[in-house]
Amino acid sequence: MSYLWILLAVSLAVSAIGWKYFIYFFSLGYGFSIAALAITMFIMFHPAITTATALACAVLLIFGCRLGGYLLFRERKAAAYRKILFDPLLKQEKPLGVILSVWIFCALLYVCQVSPVAFRLGNMTAGKPVYEIWVWIGAVVMLCGVLLEAGADAQKNAAKKANPKRFVDKGLYRIVRCPNYLGELVIWTGCLLTGIGACMTVWQWIIALIGYAGIVYVMFSGARRLEIRQNANYGEDPEYQEYVRNTPILLPLVPIYSVEKYEWLKA
Image (cartoon, rainbow, N blue to C red; front, side, top):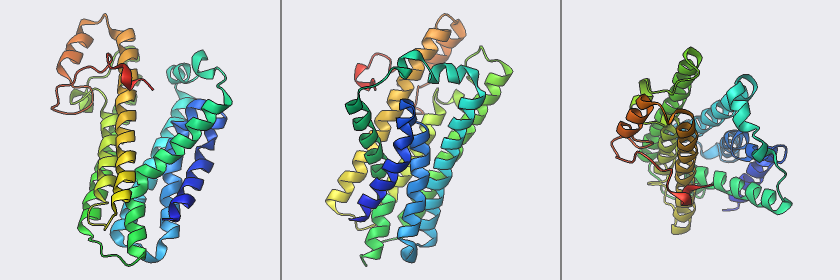
């Protein structure tokens, strides 16, 4: 699995943008690292690429470029977002050891996230028997997640443009309060599915599951931060209170309406 070292080197190089501003390890560095990893996998395994695996790499590329571009555009255009992003607490200088640890952790996580596709391609190159049906299923699920995330971002932008001071509860936000994070969970669930039928070893599955568990934790942690911020902004609004009581925070049909009290989600 020497190709994992190449992927890690690419992830470290791209996510190094976080050295400029710490939060970029988790935002711009995240999106653009996934895009770079998709390109790297396509180049490394080009002789073994099939239509289905090419689609999986393409979806990862689209996801990464869209997310990175969206975050970059929002940073430049949205004053409210810049206020959050450049909060004085976030701008405080971090110890060198903390920055280095977070950089390495993020780079490793991003590689683990895309690893089911990488392992499938690596095993195909090694001549192991693989089955295409699951990469097709996974790629389609991933694409649905990208569309869900992009749609949620677009709806939120439109709603905030119409009424910047009101919380968003229309469209996809009727289903869950964080449909963009739900979209990411769908994307990485689809990516994990591509590993089925790929003749993956136990260690390969462990790496893939670490990546999946890591991003699930990150999404719930992000939902918690958003909940705390929204409670501070809209907590006195009876309409918001009613919305929170009746709309799950992240998973449709799963009656989890609040994660604020879970300190272990703090990241």
